[in-house]
Length: 630
Image (cartoon, rainbow, N blue to C red; front, side, top):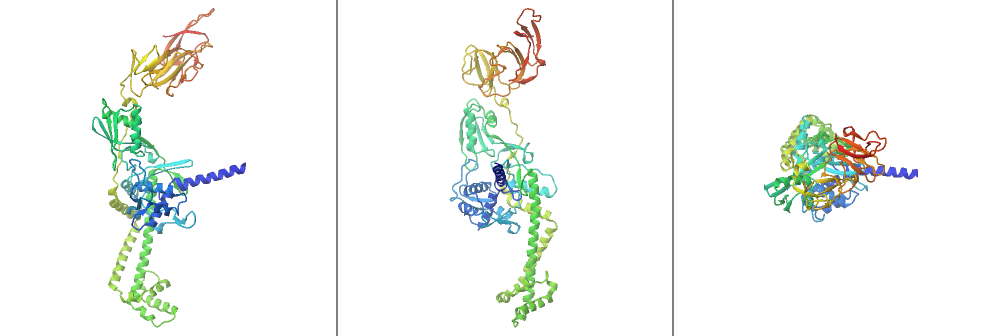
């Protein structure tokens, strides 16, 4: 048994670690999950400037991804609909309506210029064997922009989940400049769907946001939804509105969806209603207002790491500086080598050193002769001469020597020197160069990514603030019926969302909703609109033991139409019930021989408030006859 337990424990830990690291949670280094990273690697590998069939991209990605084509296809479509890194051609679905994409064989995609410019550099990329050992795949991509905060992500792993919202391109990059300048910054989500967002509880990406649809009112009888909240579609939004209408929470006469490339849902309000009141009801009872909870968890150094979005951006900015420095150092080495090669070529050809080896037959002597002749011009060297340099000079073809243009050659060398000076200047202050780099990205691409979601304070109204009491509810004491179609002189004015609390003389109670006709009871002790703030004072008697109890309570939890019991016995008897928690009452006892005290005053102010199911305190050892208010 212990062997089985150890095996299960070990395998579960391995499975949990795999799901967390290799499937569900993105890596902080490039902001990508493994499937996304492999898709981008495949797109870069296949890139020739033309569109590729998505089916072909999926097939190529399967060389690196061991989980089949379905997961690759869904991940690719999500990435493409973000519009930052994958350019699409064909039907990739509709983020507004929720329509699905066409089959992979009918749609095409390729990398955007932004992706090519900021996501790839083989010289900075570490590669490992793919799952079957046949190919090499990147450990992480050298991304130069905060991909994770730009695109957002969500994932559920074993024992943890992550949900990071998408942010605005320009705001993220400007915040990076602020970080490099040691200035304060703030970043908030931005959604392609637009809408209105309250960020007062954003808590650096670990709180929640409230998001509302953008609703226009062209007149008193019409509402038009122009933008929908994140994580909804026009289909789900219309369904929530339709459900609220069927339940009587909102009164509309029609709803029509004219959405194409832009959202347009037209709502006609019912006769006697106005658009302003209905708009409030839409926010209260439909998906026109949603609350999204957030949790920022990433993989850092191979382990799950909880942080804030500002921490992510600082990490991305620090990594950008490091990567830019590495690129500059690599470019400096390349330019130095190129300048060295051109310098040696110029010395070799201009001084006709190649003529001095025409009669030499021994290879080592050739190398020695060229080395000796080149060293005569040592002051022009960029670095120490190597045998490899001499061998490279020997590979120059006669045609190239005969067509050698000294002026053009010097011009090329001057260009390299200027470029090398610029690289060295940038290396002296990489932070300044990083700011210039980010600023150029903003100028080049920022115009296409204006903020779409408006940030405003949203006040969530309570039901009582929204719904006006305009429903007439009648109660017939004789028949025990309550409802809008009941004929009686006993009447209540309520709103459609109100419920009624019924307490019967046998200590049972229930909460009922408003209907045309509902039987409640013929022996009702208390009937009123339900309010969870009301404190009741009750004295009841157990008919079998003749013992009486007093208690104070609130009714805060219930299931509609379910019968509950206030007495600590099967059937009790209500002797006194009030909504005043400080009542004083006169208790009269059943007169018995030798009984000296036949009445007492009882104060509820001495009784503690407990739950409605509590037994209560015993009133007296005597049998109770009657209770009246003092």
